[in-house]
Image (cartoon, rainbow, N blue to C red; front, side, top):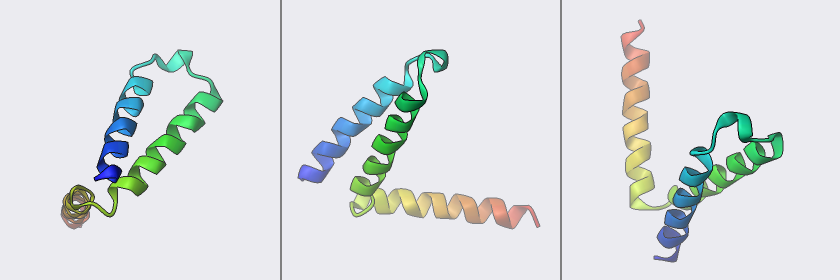
Length: 69
């Protein structure tokens, strides 16, 4: 349960950071956003939501790679 609460907080932080204009971001600001998103991914991965998201992305990638042949 704690994992989901921290993940929700990180989602809010990421959304707020991404709303800023691209020109207003420094390299360090962009690197921090990437680190936050990676931590969010690590927190979501073991949850049921993370597993469901992985299944959806796997099906999408399989569909795209299968249709390009």
